[in-house]
Length: 108
Length: 120
Image (cartoon, rainbow over all chains, first blue to last red; front, side):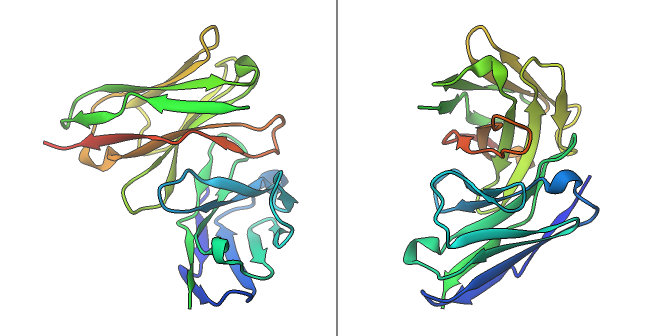
């Protein structure tokens, strides 16, 4: 089973700053089938990025994804108040689908 | 509009069984793979199981393999999760999520979840 390790665990930033979240896989992810989700309290996850770098429908362009192989990154170019939340990466290639443990982006 | 609605959660004792349902609407149910994901209180997301559109392929996460079974009724647009030998660490909100239109599309559509509490 592929293990995804997200870092940092918590990111303390101010509105307007840039956020860089990392997701590292224990083995190569075929076809770069990595997604990023945002979750706020009491809500289901919301798909932001799929296939490592493609923005989901309706997601603002301040969100971008990059990476391949075992190292993937979610970047939020300029944090808006509604972006303070928990972010999860997920790999969905093959027969096993796993999530990272999450990165919390909090207000500094 | 795509909608997914989970039901069947509740309070059960260790060792009990429970069946969750996820009703889908607003899309061609029988053409999409479906998934179960859970989230223990205050914890992260954990993938539970996936099933292909025609039930040809089913996959499970290691913690539930041999105890949980995923199935679907395409005639009635319902996804199921049969849970057996429940343990206290199965306590979680269980979400269903739909695959995208192709293998790379990701899981855009989710239900709001149903809470399962396992306690003596």
